[in-house]
Image (tube, rainbow, N blue to C red; front, side):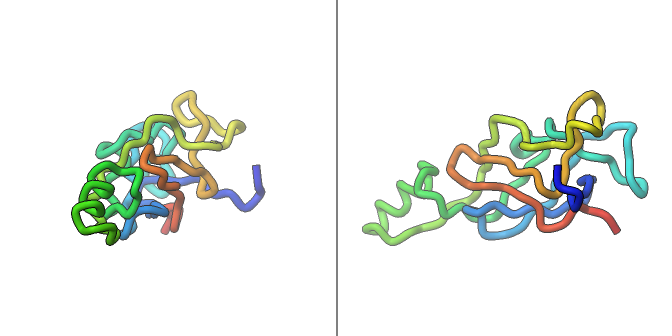
Length: 126
């Protein structure tokens, strides 16, 4: 793991390569904390629970975007983002476990089923 990786906690800001606005990570409440904020692990990937909407989605792999774009005669028409994340973040920090799972770091990535790559703008530290 790179030495510049930082643990991620509640309040971290994420962005999606197919989304139009950043969104905050919602960390599952747990005992581990930094500066009074829950520390995230790789299992904090559930859509609309841990991963909120990124505003509007631009991915043609998203059926609602594809349909709206088709209806607009091929002009890309973003539609509301409903993230579909089905697997944990990768990689986590395997040397630091948070509730028996690798701790999430600012270098971790998450894939959306619609082709977006979700990563961090900041780690949530003050």
